[in-house]
Image (cartoon, rainbow, N blue to C red; front, side, top):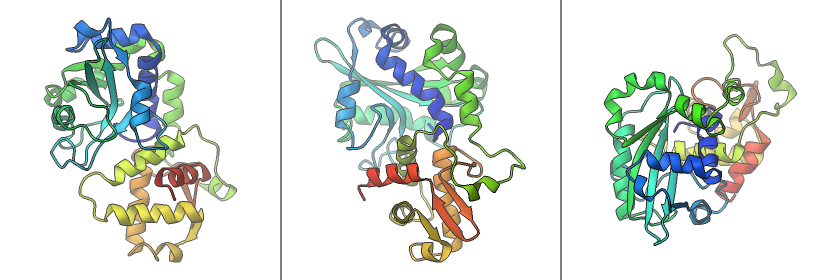
Length: 303
């Protein structure tokens, strides 16, 4: 799943419905290879949250490990992981990938899902409950299915936002939540005069934004090390406001500053410029971080 409020609008209702709506949970499981177990399976959401890193607020999102360097794990994550148990304590997992409308797969992203699912059955990360079997599923828009044809074979099940909305409207993004998420992008031609007036109160899950940022910084072969990039964000969040000169004390160049800011912006808000009321603002040569993001980052990093 890619990052921030745009994808949260689609995945969070799905996860909530899995946890709270038995009929939705049953409907989902009946579409997987674990259909025969749906009548007795219970979701281990509380147990999953307890196993995660202290400070993590969601049981389901952005599960990854860098301890394993196989093609399924290295630089990859599962958008929504759901682990179930039967009455006999047989455990199985669903690895779900969410693609919001018009989103596309990154190179190797789809192929990694079944590899990662099998890997975690054999060697689950420390923050993932042990389980005996797993499968994969894609959640996307019906209109995007034709363009995903080459990737579909890597997912054992498929759900579309349209069919979910028809049968379980509370389990996917409503028009309002989609519009709220989209409005977080800066519209072409919009001015940023409000930056000088302070941050606006946007409907962003800042805890999730911090988690997404750290996950994003750890992915792929970055030009700069995770240590340097995370250290940059550490300093900005602790100090809350810094000049370009002060940031250069932890960053090798102004280009590096722009690159790191861009990575975090993509993680929190998606592609494009940082929106008004976003995770940071710039006035002249001074950078200020949104206080809510700073608090959640500090908590996540235990600074």
